[in-house]
Length: 189
Image (tube, rainbow, N blue to C red; front, top):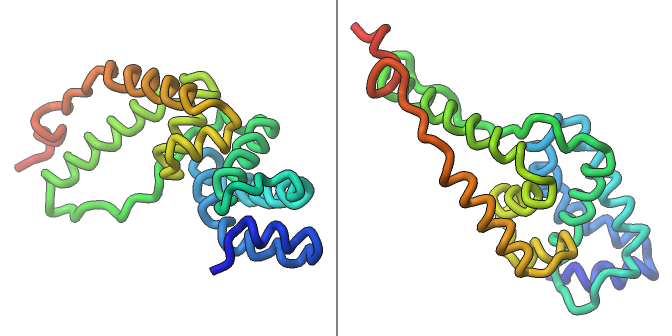
């Protein structure tokens, strides 16, 4: 398989070759952005991300084989400049609701959803730089090194921002289930 670096180098002579990067990386970029905003805005951000990457492809680091961290960095900046970063953070689609016959499972799911909303609210309140590091790590599954490259910050800054974010999240009060072990005692037979 041809590396991203080779594709970018080829695209300097044959601009259509850059389309291979879009085919390889548009989905993960879209999935990451769509979790931070709505689908239509995410499509626009992805398009603008690849347009900017195409315009700047001559500046891609010749020491990296993988362009995904570079593309994530562009996408985060595009989103930030479009001022959509304060829209609600959207958790990845869940696999569907539990059976209505399984009251305990429904209760656990409701408790988990409450906790998730509590955590997302805390992430929303974090400074933009910290929030970007957290989301690139958690939702894009990027390494510290890749995040540092994507955001053009030192790796020590990535580590300190993640440490700060984890400290904030650990300090969140644990919500207690409402009404009983799973919050549904009032409707249980």
